[in-house]
Length: 280
Image (cartoon, rainbow, N blue to C red; front, side, top):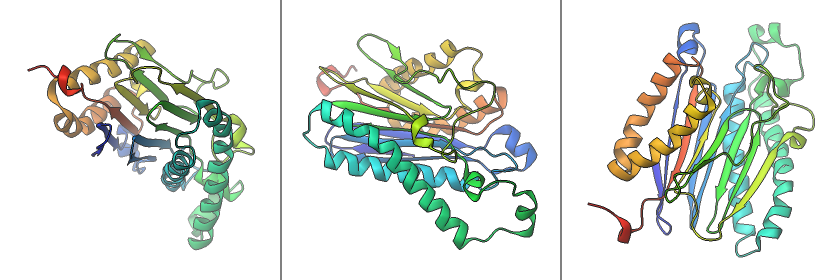
């Protein structure tokens, strides 16, 4: 799936695939992805539902998470058009609380509208919000800044065409060990969000990649995963958007089968070379 922000020629590609382990066990895909083109950029979000026995509606929780994140970031961008970066950064801290508040309200509405079955009631050991537990990685790309928010595991990478540099705007959370992760369902979840604003003095990165943890966990090393961003940028420059968008689901399925076995979800923002730089 792909979309385009016409004014700035940003293309968005995304795909989500059911993990090889989930296929074998009969579990549904717990991931979700959503993106929206805006006048001067794009908004993207990926979410990973926990998928454990106690989180038996986390596939719904992840869907609600990306819908709410994209909506909140869209409103934020409109409300901060033409405002200085210092004000954008200061107000971004409030976004986490707003996303958590809206997600909890949506979860409560779903819980009321869809009463649990007897089978679900038998494994209910926590407050209902835990049933929908999910992580969230999202980004707002505006004309002169990139705003990234992350709760829990997953990755954001940016790749520059001029320097061939791959950057991780939000470092991995050192407090997370083994398969533990912070979550939207936890008390005071907004305090666990990591937020980064990157302003563009000259040229923004040519590629921005968001992924649930099933993708980076399919690589032997962090360096191997970061190479994906460079490789994707080179392929997009050479082959164009549509061939890569069509191939992406198959690549993700292969990564899950040969790597983590988990659901794998990716969203990519890509800016083609300016016309004057386009090579034959």
